[in-house]
Every structure is written in C-alpha cells, then in structure tokens.
Image (cartoon, rainbow over all chains, first blue to last red):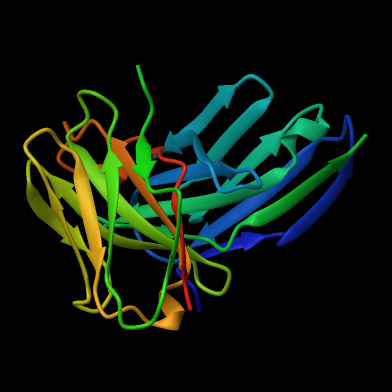
Length: 108
Length: 117
C-alpha cells in the first residue's frame, strides 16, 4: 500500500463546477503539500499545511490530522485549471513522499 | 526574483554513460532538493542539500550522487546510465531556515528531461 493515496486518479468536469480531490496518508506527518503540474512538466506549489484550512483565490485546501486526510477544492472551475494535482507529505524521515497525482480536465 | 533554473533542459545519452545536471536555486534559498519523475513511479525524492552538505537521501543506488556549492547551486550526477534512468529530473529550492525542507514551500525548476538509449 502506498503511503500517500489520491482519489480520483482522473477527473473530468465542466467549466464552473466545484471540484474536490482527496489525499489520504498512512504515516504521521509534519506537513502536507498540494502541487500543480501542467503539461510540459513545470510544478507549482499551491499549498503547504499542517492543520486546518487554507484558501487562495478559488482554491481551498483542508487537512484533518486525526483522520490522516486532506482535500483540495476548486470552486468555479475553469479550463486553465486543467493539470495534474499532486499531494505530497513530509514525515518523520524528513523527506517528501508523493501521491500518484490526479489528472483534472475542465471542459469549456 | 528569478526562479529556479535547471540546465540542460533536454538530454539524450546512451547506456553506460554518465550525466551531470545543474540547478540554480532562487537567490537566498539555501536548500536544494532533487526529484525523479517517471510515468511508472511518479515523483520520488533523490536527495537534499543544505549549506554544501547532503542532509537527506532517498532510496536510490549509489550511481546517483550530488553536491552543492557555496553559492547554493547544486549538481547531480548519474553514472553508468541505465534505460530505467530515463526520467524528468526536477530540482526544488526552499529557504532552508526551518531545518526541515519538507516543512517548507518548495519552488520547482522546469526540470531536465533525460532520455537514455
């Protein structure tokens, strides 16, 4: 079993829809990261959180430490949100362990 | 501030050769981490350098090595290349002030795409 599991693997939405991507992890963590990767490879860090909730524009990230679960929400989705979203956790081994990613496609 | 830069962007090598990839972090950032991304394994941590010292290492063979210079620029080297080393190699920098890179926002470079024939 992977330490970091993301769901769904693939997600197709219509423009304007509310989107949720989930991340579950099996180890104790010091921080959780949400990353965005567009075609061509570039990765952008969206959020880093260790508790509670963070919001940036139309993006919201939440984490429940007790349940070892985090969600990334996108409100009013737009075609430019189409990308791979990757969850990564930093644990007691001082390393980042990554989920396999969620491929999001937002159609106009 | 300029972002993280990586050179070269693309590289084609043959089995048995060696390769050196370079990463220049954001000015003022002292931690540089390297990652390998493949379709099968996804993103995997290679190693992290801080103040010219390897602070952490992933589960990769000794053929993968790196170093960091006094200006925080970093290089990684892969010797005796294998077909399975074909991947996107990403470096990321962070401030390094917390002592724990995995607790800091990582700023990624565009990556070096390595193809081993």
